[in-house]
Length: 192
Image 1 (cartoon, rainbow, N blue to C red):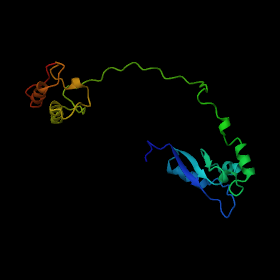
Image 2 (cartoon, one colour; image 1 turned 120 degrees about the vertical axis):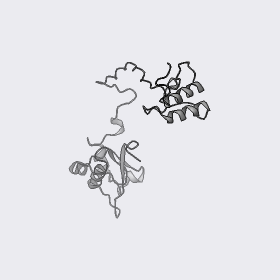
Image 3 (tube, helix red, strand yellow; image 1 turned 30 degrees about the vertical axis):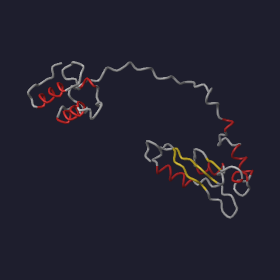
Image 4 (cartoon, rainbow, N blue to C red; image 1 turned 90 degrees about the vertical axis):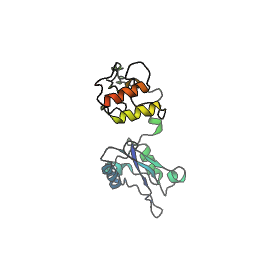
């Protein structure tokens, strides 16, 4: 997917070997992902067997947004995450745990000023007869008008009054005739 739908890129770290944990911060992977996204995306360790050691994260400056070990055996076994390492991580200032997060439903927002409501802007200038909004009145507009009159289409991408070329608040074959006359240079303006 493109940048318009991706906010976070992630990597699944499973590098414990031979029954031994691996507390690496895998900084080379972290920096490859940062470089891959031009430094414009958050980088997370979306799954892992062994939680990186705090000191490795600090020393290697691998600022993973978050890590996410599996539950049960994955987080509790000495094979994947020695209890000393888990305690070290969750008690460090490097890691924010759920109990340290504010209640987002009642958390006061200080220093935030909601944007002032903008005055309604003036209605955009209408170019009568320009039904496809390309700022040119041509045969494309005549085709759109005929399709509307024949009920092939139900609306235009511009306000309906753009097609009301005689100002009678009705879009019909009279407006189509006026548009054709304008295109054939029989008239130079619409009778509004």
